[in-house]
Length: 608
Image 1 (cartoon, rainbow, N blue to C red):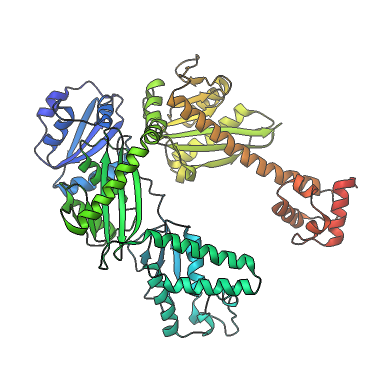
Image 2 (image 1 turned 45 degrees about the vertical axis):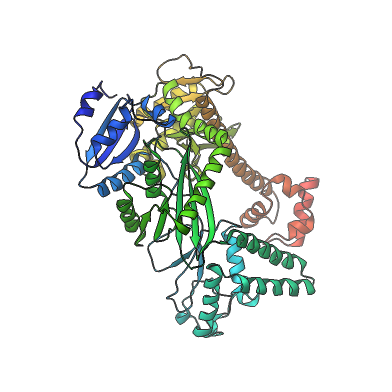
């Protein structure tokens, strides 16, 4: 907990230098990280009554107990440090964009002898040329269109080291590859196909439409109606994309337009992407930020967003950014592309920025209620949970554990993770109980948490991350065993349990439960986490139980060994599906013969 401080004295002693400032609550949790060209001027704006403040800033200030700052050599260094600290601490009042939610792109190495088109969600400074983002139809459909219209390789074979009797893969036989692996096409002719594919990805779709139309008609004439329907779907997708590509300029240019709009409580940043003189992408991003003004919010957004989307070298904004040169240098450093940022005042660029702003305003107006609800259910719920349960640490990473079994058979446990009030499925993990005999949920919970804490101490991957709060499904019994695991492992983590029937919350501070308001966002968050943990545990239990039930039954069938049991489980998934199968369906399973299938069918239905 932070000691009482005299904020007015600290404000008077702020330096006239660039740097980063950090806002803390009374328990020492970081609420917000910001940058400043002059620390004294920027930080004092938050606390001066004469400065007009948004609702978001006022909400943050109601929790601020102290602030600290770090002086940097320049404003550019402050910008870079701010970005680093936000990613490290994920403060609840900063913009928090998920790095794992990348837009899909298509990349190609044009320097290769036989270039290959690859779908990816990872942008990197490398030898590849990137096309995208792909916002309609999905990356798989785009790759299918490419291979249908432009037959290029998909394999990783080294054509210089293939055996003499090498035979081309299925793609060659279905017309989706020209088989340069066997010398079926020269480098020059293959390059022509690649160049046409690049032209399509750059916006020239006439050739693709013609090629797909011909394939659709040919498939229809051959009565391959399902294949014809696929080509028809591809043509509809291309038409949908073409409708987005409204010609706005009479020159071939690449721009990225950003506009921020705020109503005091919520904030939206619109990104409109221009490629080849056409609008190909417009995305509204609802952001949470307690910056003192919209320009600061937009600057912070761009510093993070450039990691997620491949931007052009020219960025235009609806507001002049005080740090636009330093921000451009930061983006240049991250992307490797020399970038400039300006606020246009006239002609085409101004018109495009205004269009971006109108999109942001419309989204903000129409989505007001939804944006308020989303904030309250995520960041707001995390803040409320800390206050109502008197937690010492902001519960930004919450882990929940649940045990699932039937009469002690196939005992499993789940670990689900919510980050800043939202599901973080990539962090989910599951356990098989190893040491506990019978249906003992208390001991099972202790085993699971002991394993989790030991791996946390060992800094083992995802398990190396320290949770801010652990929720166990159950009452005082489960909580006591969780506490034993924590104490025996020598770690210190905030622990609570949530009892199902009355939704009572038990903490380590009292044997009496905490009754959270039924309509509180904090309780709803705990219930959502608990229910998600229960769902994840049940799913894993059913998977194991079905597998073991099939194996245990089939052990008594003559002629069904381990390999056949595995294949039968893989095919039918459960005993119910296997019992409902016909002899022909059973015989079609890999490794099965008809006599064995008939014997198994008789066993399942006659018990012999």
